[in-house]
Length: 192
Image 1 (spheres, helix red, strand yellow):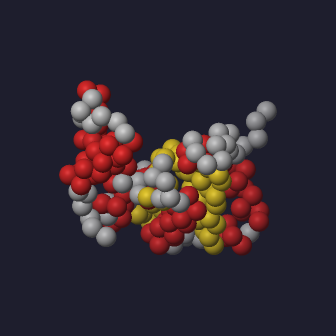
Image 2: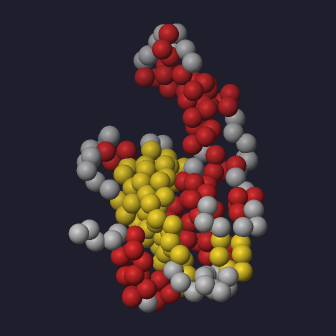
Image 3: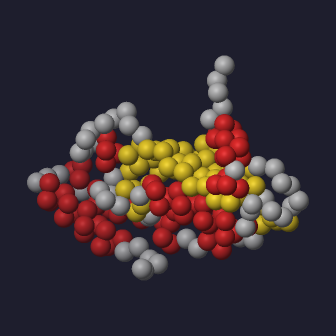
């Protein structure tokens, strides 16, 4: 896989799509559309061109804390690899350290790195969990993603109120129901 984005090829592809739809590529509103589409896809797929070591930037620290650490409601946007339509939602990421913690801003950056690729939500969930596991080897990692998929809402079954929830549990979150339930209750506290 190439580590670069070919802006010119993306512009040509966008232009061909405009023509395929039957639109007039010379219409005023569409003149700059291929350039805008190419730049949008360059950003929306920027995760391919990120390096995990650079992203984490040595923000791993020795810490004796054994309590659960959660970064909740991380907004993310991704592109479904089947239709290249957006899916978007929130990621909830927790872990229980075993001598090391990761800078909290790195967790949303990890989510974004993998979300900014052609994805399926199931794989995205696993990639986030596995990356945190490899980075700090905690006692456990828990990741829950909740998302709405435009490929299901705009086409196909056309179910606008549907959403998909995926989870990945590692270590103590997988082995201990009480630990798992504590995490789930903290990411979705009961109201009132």
